[in-house]
Image (cartoon, rainbow, N blue to C red; front, side, top):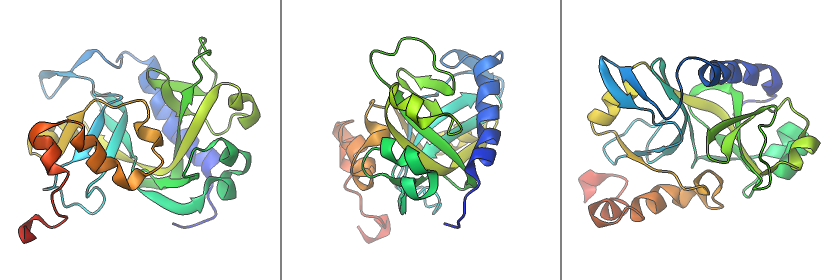
Length: 223
């Protein structure tokens, strides 16, 4: 991962797109028409790569969808940690990062940009400036905000370099082709302390045959 980063500027491009979705005609959670058919928005849900997905960008990844509408979808990979401390790049923000307090590779698109996930504290009832809800208390956080002010309102952050993006209908086609499982996310999924275990963990909690998928070898041809 190259440095130095220019994230306060590049993050604005990502957040502009998210704000457009948040304030436009499409409302997350409602049915939308994609490819001529009604599709339930998957914002806030998990994409879990199936063992047959061999794209190195997504092999055994767990992706949280932070936006899904008729124009496409945007998410971040939750289980690819780097060795770069958040504090090394973003200073005081590192104090708010949960373990492991490192940057994560969010996906292959615009790796010089950043998306920050955070959870609001239970006592926070009003909408925060710079916080864009995704699902429940989870949302994206504008890193140009004052970290000291946000410290009082959020608990734990995770910062992702780059993101994963799909054009209109592309993600639906990949799901239909068997590249992704789609599951509900638990509140702690984006902030697990052992992200390398997340792929298997999400599959195991589904039970039955899906739990067995968690034990597939990396190369199924060797099984």
